[in-house]
Amino acid sequence: MLEELSLKLETTLKKVRGQGKLTEKNISDSLREIRRVLLDADVNYKVAKEFIENVSSKALGKEVLNSITPGQLITKIIYDELVSLLGNSQSEIKISASGLTVILIVGLQGSGKTTFCAKLAGRLKQGGRKILLAAADVYRPAAIEQLKTLGAQINVPVFSIEEKNAVKTAEESLKFAKSHNCNTVIIDTAGRLHVDEEMMNEVAKIKLLVKATEVLFVVDSMTGQDSVNSARAFNEKVNFDGIVLSKLDGDTRGGAALSVRAVVGKPIKFISNGEKLNNLEVFHPDRLASRILGKGDIVSFVEKAQQSFDEIETKKLEEKLRRNKFDFDDFLKQIKAIKKMGSLSSILSMVPGLGAQVKNAQIDDKAFVKVEAIINSMTVDERSKPKILNGSRRSRIARGSGTSIQDVNRLLKQFAEMQRMMSQFSKKGFGGAFKNLPIGR
Image 1 (cartoon, rainbow, N blue to C red):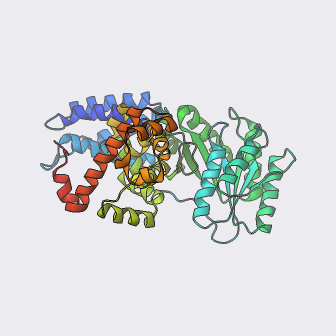
Image 2 (cartoon, rainbow, N blue to C red):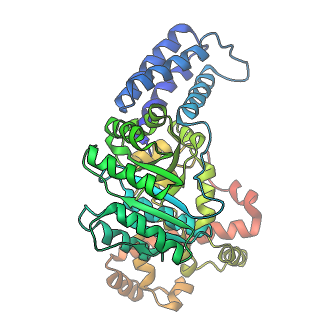
Image 3 (tube, rainbow, N blue to C red):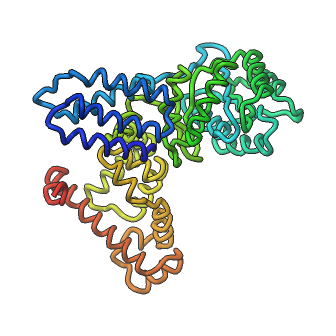
């Protein structure tokens, strides 16, 4: 997420960290470079200018305490300004305390509105809401079918009509929701390839008709300043309540993420990454600022882990580890749980200090597919007792999984090493086991 921007800022800040003290010259030189980095990332010119001015005014004349370095001080000032730029605090989505909650989703075509509708529906459903998805994008070919397919995946009904009328679809969806005891309607509206008056008028009419509780504008983070300009135009016409950043995990420079809140004056509420319906994060300004500065986001990492790992299964695993009974079936369960958390690169980028390494490592998520294929080609006995895997068995597993004997041997060797380490944990406890590991050497 925003790795390119993060790496460039990290390189610039390293120069300041090497200074003995903060002076007007080294602050000016560093901020000139940071301004260039922000503009390269397609941050709005006025936003970048104001950001640099704020950092400069706070850094100049700032006394450096003996306990911190000049680099730490300037990093802290930049972090605080990034948090301020992104909105300071988390902004909750509005939910009606009584009656029907109507959430209207707007944005340009291709921004990821339809997928976000399903992601939001799944999230609210987990929170106990009874959801109805309304397919009011009646213009894009297959948009209604796409929403129905996504709705089926999370077991949420989708309302649509035969008539090609978005306003009527939205209106009828409220009646359907009330008659079927749904308390939340999420309306997917049509996008266009560019902002036009017809689309704006239609969306504005729907908003007034359904008395929307919340209007969310989905921003394609990969389109930079174009998305910021469209956000401004939509806000002037529709006056939306919040912003959703989509595709922030793609090859994006970060300009939209850093500019849109300052330009429009509306809070960012969600980050919608990837096609999987569980890839939706509540937006926290402090956490994204920390990721941008290469400090990771351990809080989000822990939250994702808690959502993905079953508590009962985790306790069973702990007991197996104590008895040194960890086998390939357990390993397979852990792989599936990790995959629920998202891509490996996105997971590791949340760990402090791993941002740059992840960017350069080119981590291949398909490696999991090969490992799963190998384990699935084993018999029940082979999974629980890897020691019985002789040459002929390994050859059969390689053929069955479409891999090579070398791949099978490599996995068995890595698994044996993992078992050895886990045996150390169970015998000595974590403190004793780590003494023998080459950490930090």
